[in-house]
Image (cartoon, rainbow, N blue to C red; front, top):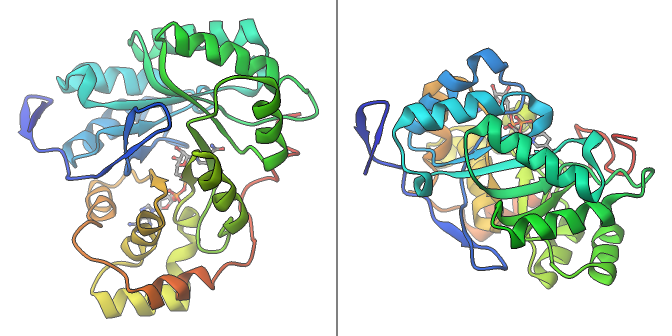
Length: 285
Ligand code: NAD
């Protein structure tokens, strides 16, 4: 139970995943990509009202202030909300990664984030190892309770393993039924890296797949709930975006049913290795 914006609301019952440094992350959160800065405080407050307690933002989204305002206005305690932000592509480098988080914290009105990610590896800049060393310092200083990466490929993770000390707690990757990322998920599992799925419903694309629509009928659930449940049963962390309070509630309501193994496999079989976003090696250079 907690107070949000003067109202007493219960957080949704969401399991947590224990990251490789012991920090617990709610497996279901709310992503604020493409929410206009001026709407972010209101939309994030609606998400809190719908029971969300984990927010995924980024410097690139330019809406950290709105997230910070929503947290301040909500009345929720700092330890009741899990906040992730990500380093922008122009902030690579040890010192700039540190100062970029300090600027994020001012915008978020927080003294620490729960998770700080390198948004893209940008191999052409070849600075992600130095950047990670800045992240290690932020972790040691308590400015981030956990540190991780996003859009990293195995070769980037291998290099961090060779040249730095801390294993990333998560890798946030594009992952949805049309892009199953089977090999990368296996790689994460072997190394104790949690998988976070971005665009978990394929920005809406997954919802019109015949098989998904058919399963929605079978389980008497919406297509979005079927896809989100598939992620949850695979152990991935998800944070779909919606500005519509009804859909926010619908999306997080995936803990009262279970897909059979055969239906999980049927969704696995929709994989076409088809990305919506750019290839991680090419973006941000
Ligand atoms: P998403 O898969 O969450 O889809 C969002 C779209 O689906 C929106 O258009 C929304 O209106 C629609 N939608 C949501 N719920 C619905 C429902 N129940 N029924 C019908 N339509 C529904 O895509 P996303 O926003 O790209 O990804 C989610 C989050 O992932 C982002 O907000 C962001 O936090 C993160 N992300 C990270 C990266 C990265 O590079 N690390 C890239 C993209 C997104």
